[in-house]
View 1 (cartoon, rainbow, N blue to C red):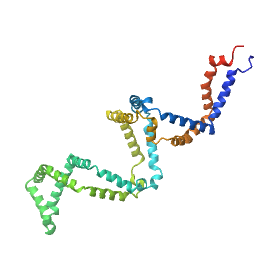
View 2 (view 1 turned 90 degrees about the horizontal axis):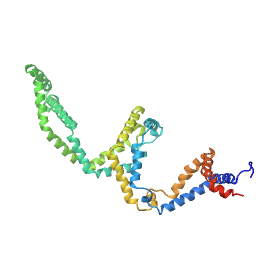
View 3 (view 1 turned 90 degrees about the vertical axis):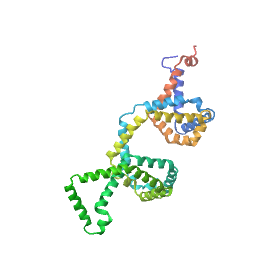
View 4 (view 1 turned 45 degrees about the horizontal axis):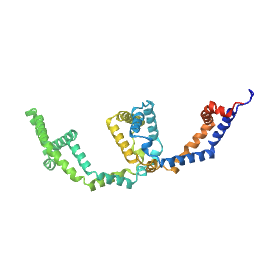
Length: 344
């Protein structure tokens, strides 16, 4: 064999590379991918979830990818920019709330909410017991009594001059007995403090009776009818880009903290555990079928993504380089050369 003569191994390598590269183009590529998808799904009909993964593996993946992965600081900035673009998009002014959620869907949500009667009663009780609400009731009652005494009662309204005389008398009494106003206010507020539990209890009882299913349904649907024809832009009027980005940052910071909590881990573990209880010993096709992943669905994505992307990689020379890297080691191996270049 002369120096200028190409050895058989190199010749076969070039032929093999050309063959493989040609098979990864156009119709041949699609035929190949379709066949492999079918072959994989056929195997998925006999392979169970437990054979390819375990609960421990999945939880470790969640830990690495979801919990422990360090996220770049540019993520909240990008998310804020994207949210601002959505907020300012023309689609916000061209679509109403009713275009997104139909009245029938809104009604369905209300009906489901009405089923949560126990939760509704608990929320009302907790609101009534809150110190802010109790202070609000106390102030409203106090102002109501004071206004009634000096301005709005029946006598001052029907008898001319009585209201002015009462106010005049109040001023004179305060001059004669300094601090009378403060004493009256203190005693009135003390009485309110003693009476407040009863007032709150009666108001809670009233609300529990008044907020019947029918009343809640009518109120919520009336509110819905008043907003369903308003555009999305009108509904979030006043929410500027800066405020929106602040909300995005707050949500991002919440996620960073929430993903590391024991609560998140417990929820993830419950979901993964149930997944393996239900599908662990069943063929993978059962899981894929329940998720709606069929041959047609996969091939639709192959046509939409895989074939165009591989086409670009072909143009860039990556596919040929990849095939060459995969095959060169074999054709350069001693075992291959021993067969292709037998000793003369």
